[in-house]
Image (cartoon, rainbow, N blue to C red; front, side, top):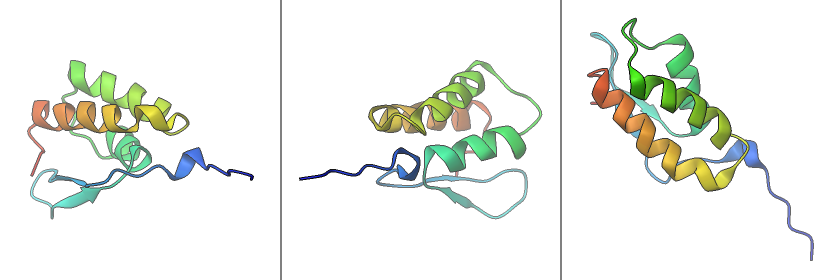
Length: 85
């Protein structure tokens, strides 16, 4: 039996909802989406949790065992930046 696993398709069981500025709430469903938000949509003030989340989300894209931990750290970064909805 062959098992095929696509590491790039890892998704979280529940999305993380955030709101940047006065925008609409956004659902982040995977480490890849989280990393894109961290890199391109994040507020200018970036703290310690931001750096951890950014690197961990990158690693979680290729290592499915880090997926849940990346979600936890991403939520902490959202709290730190006051964007968790």
